[in-house]
Image (tube, rainbow, N blue to C red):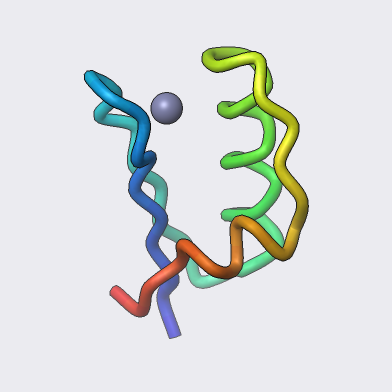
Length: 52
Ligand SMILES: [Zn+2]
């Protein structure tokens, strides 16, 4: 099943989708750190994920 995550930060249109949940988590965490200086956990990412 494809998973999708849309960044919820204001004025950010980052979105990632993949069949590989681990890949989505990895990319979202990297994005959050690089763009927003935020450290998010795997759990946080999973919470915001939706089936695409
Ligand atoms: Zn973002």
